[in-house]
Image 1 (spheres, helix red, strand yellow):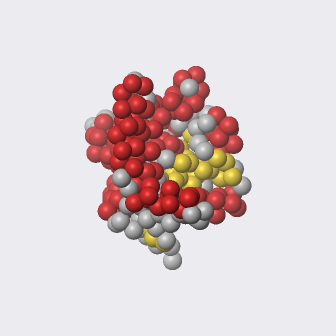
Image 2 (tube, rainbow, N blue to C red; image 1 turned 45 degrees about the horizontal axis):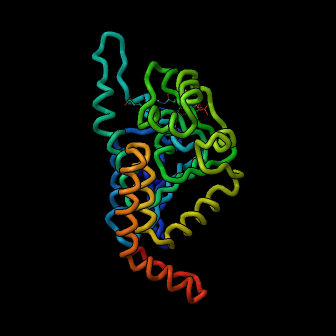
Image 3 (cartoon, helix red, strand yellow; image 1 turned 90 degrees about the vertical axis):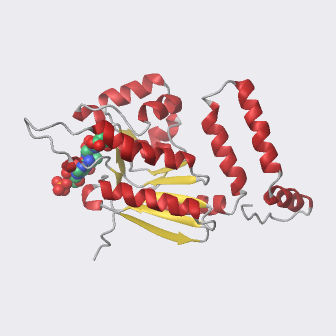
Length: 264
Ligand code: T3D
């Protein structure tokens, strides 16, 4: 029988794999899914053994966004407060992914629609199966792109494409998404999890304190002028230079052997 938990976690060799697990609803989000996913991400941050996160979806979809059957939209009824949902569920989730001091890889195994698309884009490195597609489905139901969509999209693919995707809800294939720079890579369906796992392994065995600083710097870059950003790089490099992994990196280079990083 299928596991009933809406989010599954599997820890192996420094990698926490997090799988959205409501395949019969294309892994759409309900409140329980949010709760489990946030707990899994907290577990990743708090367990020092976890050095990379790999997110994916069970079944044929990555995630179809908000579970629309959870919304009471009967005529004459009170409108649901979607601002509250964003404030309490989606926004904290996006913030948690962006603030996680670990690389977060997203393996988009199938359709990613609505908030499901934008949560994928919030991750650090996105790989998608050739058959996957990204849909800014919001305009079809009278909503605006959320979960950072109106922030991520113009930065990743420019305003022209961002506006067109948001207003038309036209699906974007994984290959187009990769060619536009919306995601890192599109790979054959059969290779997706293998490629994503190899990448997760590479990062988990890397100098993860430095990777966390790199993530932070790149995310900060669009929010400050170059002059201030150079100062941020100086401070981050000072911190990186104090890590054991920096010493190990240089030592292993000089000794002509592979580095053995431990994330400290
Ligand atoms: O409400 C708030 O809190 C505000 C926040 C909003 C964030 C958002 O994400 S709003 C956007 C919500 N998502 C959507 O509008 C997408 C809705 N889904 C679709 O457009 C399509 O399902 C897909 C394009 C994703 C996939 O199409 P297809 O043809 O491959 O599958 P399907 O047949 O439409 O779906 C399969 C089943 O999943 C189906 O159930 P059934 O008929 O087999 O019992 C369908 O109802 C269910 N499903 C798919 N998406 C959702 C869903 N059930 C509930 N909520 C969904 N979002």
